[in-house]
Image (cartoon, rainbow, N blue to C red; front, side):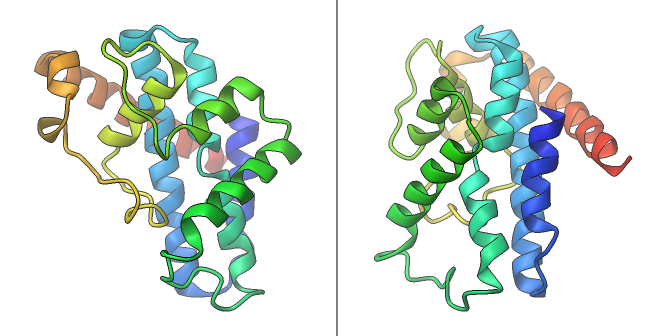
Length: 187
């Protein structure tokens, strides 16, 4: 997971444009929160392999990082023409980048399912884990905010799945994991 995080962060390290660098920073913050939340949710709610969930959370936006890393070279690449470009192009690019990085099929299938995936009740899969983690992330993706309605815990079905005490505990534990991840990457 640490190596995957370093690879994902490396995509953003060469960005020159300040606006794109800000998007990359926000995308990393989103990714770190989703990864930490996925790790905790996997252990406590969905009971899928927590390490796989952590890894999936780290790489779930790898296509977005790749696009940001190339945007300096291709002006207009990330313009707000979302009706014609971003939705399908990012999906295709993400799929190809995951293939090149040899992301396991189970992980890439769950990531690809995020765009149109529906949460199972009770949640019990890697896709469910990622869907919950994305819903609970306090930092939205700067690239998918228009595609994924950001829900607060009280606005979603999370209330029917996780009691408030458990939810607060999950949020606190994942926040600590984000701090640990950030500290590990600064070393």
